[in-house]
Image: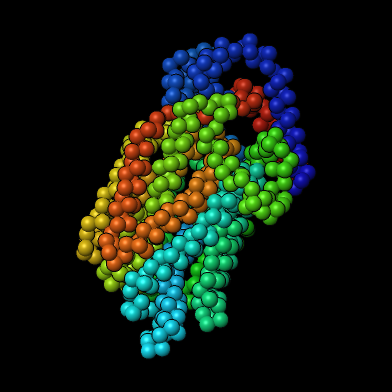
Length: 607
């Protein structure tokens, strides 16, 4: 493997030397077109630009001009997206695609959704049992009613227990969120250098360890305190948690999806997530009812997570070619030898991060000052990241509060809450898998036959983002006002339409940066999501803990106002702005084709 990587690096360097040897010829033959393209602000590999090419919307090819200049009229195959060239010649079973990762990813999200409500019920039961035990110790005349783990336990439906549960879930989010915020950007950057699937495997392993701790605590509640669950969440955070798993899944999709289709591809992953959250609670309810034991669903979840891990290690093909990995490693050498040791000694670097002030350093990718960037690019990245972080933060801040609130306000049990979660997320899945792809196809039309390039966010992306945030605001206004359970579910369905905002936001972020920065920008978003997972639940859980039993809906007023801020920020994003990074090998089609052919022939000879 090391010899093969070294040969590929030598071949790539040899190709660059070939390009340099032809530089004077290329200047005399095509210098006029290159200068014009340079003044237009972008230069695409293997392509020249005519005078009719738009400045900021380069979605049409120039094959017609070349044909007219050379007098050639032969039929050509439609140009491919540049990323597809990395996978040419691979057999189908070794060619990456979003559909390779989707089935096991859905199994992962199904397990996550299946344990979501039972996990809250388990924590509530454990804390309620501890609360009554401590109360009986201080008040001998108090007779404690038995608390059954995972059952409805109506005696636990009191403000004191609700407040304790809210604060404990806050501590859990702090443990997982802070650690995932530290680890996520580094894992994202490592995935650019060493491949996606191995780094995703790390996050899945952390989830498995968390589930193991929860099972042990639930099985032996008299031996292990509920506080041990904090350890499980800490292990999950050290692996990056599901936040990093989603970000790296998007990076995998970006590697094998053209820019104009990424919002739909990301929508598939979000659809899988919410489909798992929609179907999981119903399946969990039936499984618990059939087995009569709450722990059965956690055993099944462990099996699902382990299956996902095995698929990643032995079945799913890597989406990042060795050539791109080596190029990313070469770039990181300029940062310094210390950063280069991150992969070989991750524990040492994690300790350095936890004790140092470098936590926010990965966010620099969202405010780039490199060649090819400008103030418009920086503003767009900053505003898109802010809107996405706010939307994610509100989702994380309200996730457990909604479940706790419905138990308190409407007296819903596990079944009713499972139905609510399933209905809302079924609507979200329909939005992501039907409405978003259809809207994208109708508004954008079929995929262009011209070469696909970075073009930044277009107006369609921005309209989708603003409409999504508007429906979120509308749904949370309903949460604030309604006092009927059925109408509360309707408000959740309205808010679910906002689910198409997150994949569109993250796809828009990847459209602003070069392909070799995708892992970095999504890793930086993982850092922001990790911080949001800490800050948002901290604020909103404390608000709920202080206002429950008084004006309990105060937390939904604050959540609505936060969405309002995101809606305002979305109007500051400009269309058709992107980071124009010029690669040194971008000279001519003939030279690049010759270099690729030579590389492929030598690679086959080595193999």
